[in-house]
Structures are given as C-alpha cells and as structure tokens.
Amino acid sequence: MNNRSLKTSVPGIGKTLSTRELASLRASWGVTGEKDGEGNDSGSQDAEVNSGREDSRNFTPSIRALRMRRLVFPATTVSNPLDRLFAVVSVKGKQFKVSPGDVINAEKLKGAKVGDVLSLPPMVVGSRDKTLLGRPTVQGASVSLTVQEHVQDLKVIVFKKKRRKRYQKKNGFRRQVTRLRVDSIDANMDAH
Image 1 (cartoon, rainbow, N blue to C red):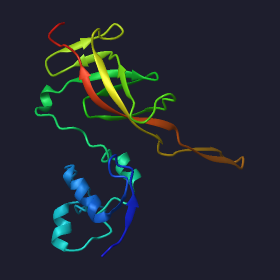
Image 2 (tube, helix red, strand yellow; image 1 turned 180 degrees about the horizontal axis):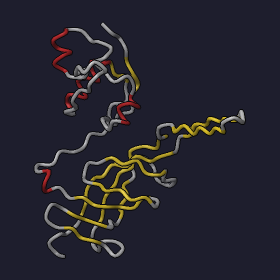
Image 3 (cartoon, rainbow, N blue to C red; image 1 turned 135 degrees about the horizontal axis):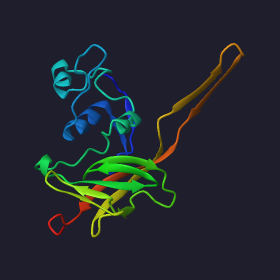
C-alpha cells in the first residue's frame, strides 16, 4: 500500500488527501485518466479497483500538476454544449475567449482578493446562432468572474549564447498570474 499524501488547497477541503481520496475526488469530478509513457491508461479508477492496490502511477503527484491541467476547478456542465454562450473579455490588456465554467490565467490583479467577484463588459458575445460585436463593448452585457487564487505561472527559461565568445547566460522567469473562473455571461441576445 502506497501511503503518499499531499497538501491540497481545494476550496472546502483544506486537509491532507491520500492518493485514494484524491482518486475518488477526481472520479467524482468526472476526470478521465491520462496516458502514461507506455500508452496505458494510468489514471482510470477501474485499473485501481482491478489491481486491488495503489500504484505510484495512479495519481497525480502534486496539486500544482492538477492546477496546470485544470482539474482542481472542473468546468461546469452545460445541458447542451451547442447552446453555450461565449464572450471575449479584456483583462489587463489581453483578450480571452471564455464560456461559463472556464478558468483563465490573467496578469496579476493587485487589488483583487481571493473570492472577489468581478464584472467585466465583453467586447464580443455569441452563441451558435448569433454573435454580437461591441463598439468597443456590447451594451447591456456583462461577464461575471470570480478570483480563485494568485499563483506563479510555469517557469520560462531564457538562454542566451554567443558562439565562439565564451558567453552564455541562463535565467528563469515565473510571472505572477491571477486565476479567474467564469461564473456567468449575462447578455440579452434577443434584444439586439
């Protein structure tokens, strides 16, 4: 039996999870397993039940890896994905195409606290049948976003080299990001 555990920051849990608890949590979210290097389905719950023991390949080793794969905050389910609204919002000068339930990494918002709800005017709102373009924003529409956390992005390696000059320099950089979850898109598509 593998007794590995990890500290998690999943909202509402805040305790140390064993690998079995983490696997059941992922299964309740409807997360499918990933392929390991041999092409086997390493994260499926059926493989764990059939084997009768926990294998080191049957769990994601860190909560950071879960965050990068967007498994900590799963997307909400929509009854018909074709009826799903989308919007384009601008956060700190960068544009994101979002739908309800999406999680985006924006530049760090200094005044925002975890749990704050932001309301942004969208530049474009659309569905399968109709798209509204704003000049510059769509009037009467808003996108509701919740601040999930402030984290650092993955490391970017900056490597400089000048050949035949004995010069090379290696730096790493991790930018500060704010993780935002899209709660809802409020737009009256029939009024336009």
